[in-house]
Amino acid sequence: MTRRVPFVVIFALVLTACGAALEAEDVPETFGQLVVPDHLRSMEAAWDTDFGKTTIDLNELLVGIPMGDPRDAIPPIDGPRFEPVADSNWIADREPGVLVQIEDDARFYPLSILTRHEIVNDVFGDVPIAVTYCPLCNTAVAFDRRLGDETIRLGVSGLLRNSDLVMWDDLTTSLWQQITGKGIVGTHAGDQLNQIGSAIVRWADFRTDHPEGQVLRSDQGFGSTYGRNPYEFYSSRPAPYGFYTGEIDERYPALERVVGVTVDDVERAYPFSVISEQLVVNDQIGKQPVVVFWGAADTADALDSGTIGQAVGIGTGVAYSRVVNGQVLTFEALSDTEFNDIETGTTWSILGNATSGALAGESLELLPHRNEFWFAWQAFFPDAQVWTG
Image (cartoon, rainbow, N blue to C red; front, side):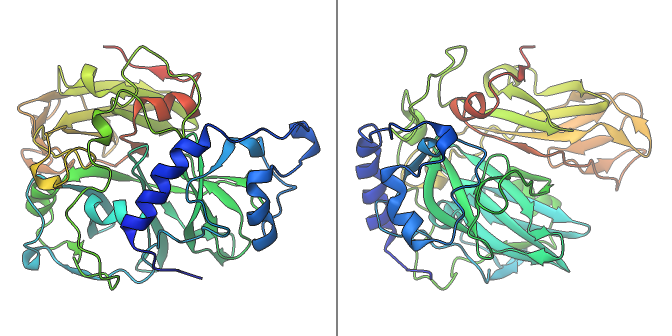
């Protein structure tokens, strides 16, 4: 059942829990015995989750919202309301959002809305998807909600693992890791949601490239006012909140953003501080030719100042396949919003659309990727490669 708890109350509970997270006592029994830790007992009693089926140590799950049953205390949007790009005048040009495009249907989900709801259960034609965002890790990921013959609805469990959002589904109350889309506890433990290509982009760029697109309306039926950041100055901290208790790889600052790319279960990170020096990276992961664009330097940091549209510029990183019509392209930067391929001389926008030249009208294929914080990437992918230039 969805409870519309005021977000200011939720955020206060989150901050309180940050301190309590470090004080939670480990259960003395071993992981192999599958004993539910004391801090999860109220969930075990209230939920239908099969806690006996898990791919993780249950002690890794921390309570982000200290309630007996915290499911959907941060309410997902289940009936999203959209408006045409031309009718939307409440979003600042610099504001970031999640771009999802399936065929010719392009939609923009402002981070100012996603920080308040974290999940949007949506449908593109006959494809049910979930657009998810964890503000504590800055991970925006879209998933297909179909599992075999079933379609699940994803919600916010109120639990965190390595500071990342843990989702739950309405059919089995299984728990899902947002950053990977993997089932970690319950009936679907070990299962994998199919990831849909998405990217964090600037509103001005989306509006230019997709004038016929749709954007979430500022009225989603919750009485919320969007445009402000409840996690004020979070990304300026030297370390994440106390929900993350692991070690931090000191090669990069804990809250530096990286483009985390996933290709055929292979992960590679491209730190913003490195790729911003040259704006484009031509690479190959396994057999997949990859290009990473960095740019739109004015893109506001959604987790910096209180008013997102006035926040410091952080830029964005977007990963694409370099293959177009069977040809592998090599890219160079013309500016922080335009790129050129050497083979055909075509000009491409940062959103991967060919605007002029031999391939005008073509689009690059988005690869599954995220703009997560460094601490989150190295926590979930500790053995993966990091591109260093």
